[in-house]
Length: 119
Image (tube, rainbow, N blue to C red; front, side):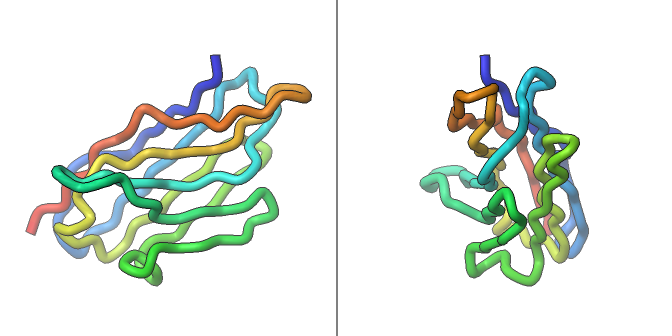
């Protein structure tokens, strides 16, 4: 079963920092393109940041300059460093990645991690 496991969510004050991590199953060969989405209460899920296998990044306008997506291909992890957080960043954050198992590739979602930013 393809798995991505997220960690690092929690409660943080406005202006604070938090780092989310997403790790692929130990049985996976690696991760290709990946990204982070979020879903706030009553809103649709939206794309926050993306990163290609080669390290090219992209950001949703409201987080650019505050969030940084990064990856470690050897560890099969993708991280989202969140600085200068705002109450509007409160949401469940989901990792998505194309996970490689041998010659097979699967688009996989993590289970989500709650981030709450208090004002």
